[in-house]
Amino acid sequence: GIQVEQSPPDLILQEGANSTLRCNFSDSVNNLQWFHQNPWGQLINLFYIPSGTKQNGRLSATTVATERYSLLYISSSQTTDSGVYFCAVGYNNNDMRFGAGTRLTVKP
Amino acid sequence: DSGVTQTPKHLITATGQRVTLRCSPRSGDLSVYWYQQSLDQGLQFLIQYYNGEERAKGNILERFSAQQFPDLHSELNLSSLELGDSALYFCASSVTGTGTEAFFGQGTRLTVV
Image (tube, rainbow over all chains, first blue to last red; front, top):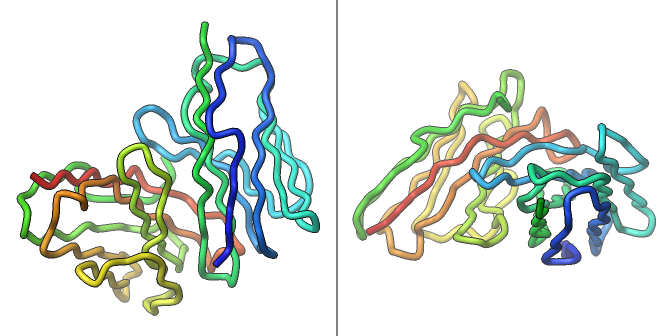
């Protein structure tokens, strides 16, 4: 099956810092999504981005499907950005697999 | 609110028992996915249904089964429960298959004692 690798596994930042999270995948995909799992366990949709670049406030994402990677940028981080960030890829139209996640801690 | 509803939110049961988790997808979504997230772990894909038919299967144990009904809601049945089955179980839905954006419910936290 498809392999999804996220890096780094853990990231600790001071409030106001910027960060880049990476997601590599091993095969062609028809979907790529970024999620934020907050401390209460909720999975929040950040981006649906099978290719190209999108921006939403302080967050932006880029997927280069031909090179099988996606990047999530967080600028001017806030303590509320803490949690786990997952990327998930869809392939074969019926299977959606998650990476192991990046655990982000933003300190005040 | 994602529009995906999961019930119950919390469930505590004893080893050896059987439970049923329920998921109502967003209006108009035909695909339902089930995932298991054990403590501090990633999300493990269990199974996917599209318009009532099973389309993809992941690491789902034989003790677990699922189905999607004509009204498109789905149920995940877990039987002969073991302590290791304690986890957060998520349901997600999308319009068609994985080529469309998926949205997740709030999860059911299952504790087996």
